[in-house]
Length: 39
Image (cartoon, rainbow, N blue to C red; front, side, top):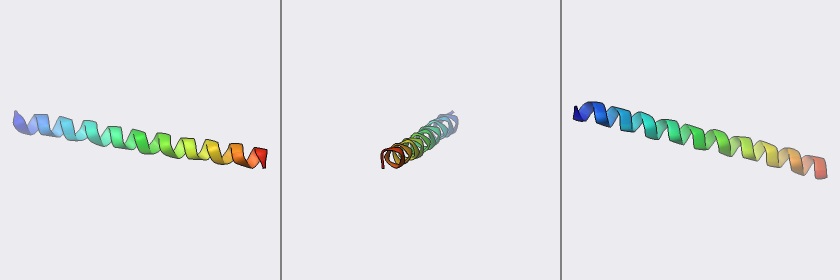
């Protein structure tokens, strides 16, 4: 049971990190596009 809990926790943390990285890249792309338009 402990192993299952650890696996679920690990998957949850991994998914959260991937989501943060994805959003960070998306925000950087949007920022770069906005700067390019203004420039």
